[in-house]
Length: 364
Ligand SMILES: O=P(O)(O)OC[C@H]1O[C@@H](O)[C@H](O)[C@@H](O)[C@@H]1O
Image (tube, rainbow, N blue to C red; front, side):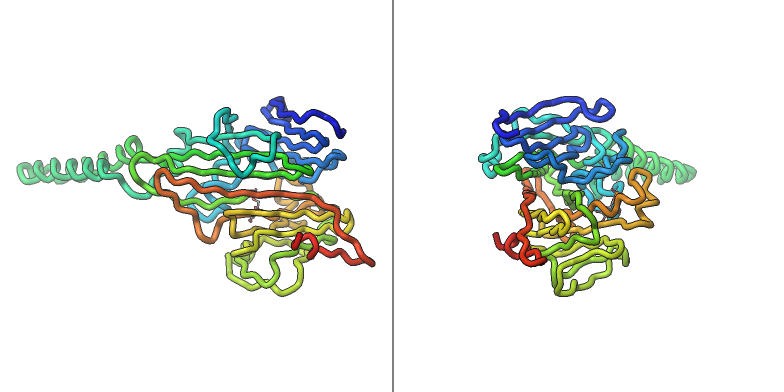
């Protein structure tokens, strides 16, 4: 495949959904669906798939695609008022033909820029928590009007409460002020076939209001056999265990291995994490920036069976390690921008008398 021209092509994917295919000169490739801004494929120059996508994945909006790299925004998991993992993974993104410059990706020529902006639907589900000045003023006016009427006509007490009720219904239904944001995502293939994702989220509220969000790149890695995999870089860190009501624990000192379901949010993690696949003699290296936390998830057999878009045995061949910002939500004032970057490499594991040496990878 070497010697091909790098290309970025918009074409149709499963069920006619639009996808962008990136190919670099050495033959590495990646695919991104506009639905969800969702990376569904990342292949080596030997066309070997590095991401897991379920055979039962449903490519039917608004259901998020099971596998690849869903974007969790503006809420990770179900902790908040929004749907699980927020709405970004269920929305149609657009190609951003004229993004502001991305200085950090200047080395890559094979990339696509996507953008997500709020629709009226988002406005309904991610409103400000507090009423704006004009809304409060409206409520006050309603109240004064009804009080005036009350003093002159006692029987209008009932009307007072009626007016108040109507006013607050109007505020909720028609006048509520909503968050406004721009979410720009660049997906790029770097030298050596690395996959790089850069998210830039900007508060574009016109009324001076900040907003907060949590975030994750929900990366599903393809692994040969989950019981042959270990994760380096998270030892001795504190984590919140999603399987134990987010109770806080401290990880033991050894690399993480897998014998049962896991759903943990590791806190204040290093910028580099390695996933070592013994059988494949391959190591995935995650490098992240702006994303202090890391989620490690595998549903294992019981949960796998309960997921309609996931094969019963597929848990054996996937592992999610998700670069995230969860424990401390990001708050942006109007005009402020947050950046979260993830770089993924797949390298051969160094193999010496039966022992893999991930430290070489982590220090590299
Ligand atoms: O089924 P979903 O919504 O894609 O979520 C899958 C998993 O995503 C993980 O990130 C969460 O930690 C798990 O709790 C969750 O089950």
